[in-house]
Image (cartoon, rainbow, N blue to C red):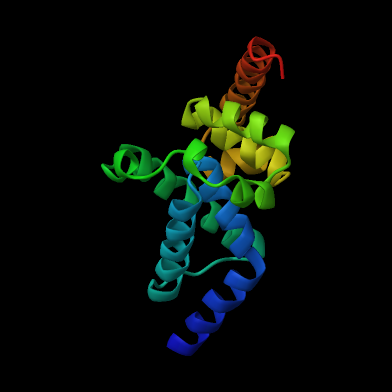
Length: 163
C-alpha cells in the first residue's frame, strides 16, 4: 500500500506539480512560500491515506489543499516575515510572467482571497463554475456571483491604475 501511495504521489507531482505551484503562488504572491506549500501538499498526499475516484478528483483535492494552505499562510506570522512581491528579483518574476501580466497579477493579489481563488480557478485552470463550486464547496450561484464581483473589482482596479 505504501508503494502504491508513493507512486500515486510521485505521479501526481509529475502531472500536477506546476498547477499546485501556480495555485499556491496565486494565493500567496510569494514564490518561495508557494514552493513550500507545494511540497507540503504532496507530502500530505504521500503520507495520508486518501482514495480518489478519478484524476479529476485528485486534481481538485490538490488545488483545494493548496488554496487552504495559502489561506493559512495569510493568517500566519510568516507573512510578516517574508518578502513581498515587489522585493522578488525582476529576473525571477519575468520567468513567471510577462510585464503586463505582472501588473495584472499584482492587482489580483490585492483582491480578497475569495475573489483570487475563483479568478485563478476559472481563468488559469480553466474550470467551469460547476467544477469550481465542487472544489471550493460552495453553491454554484455563489461561485458565479463571486466571479462577477471579482471581475468588476479587478476592472475597477485596472482602470484606476491605467493598466
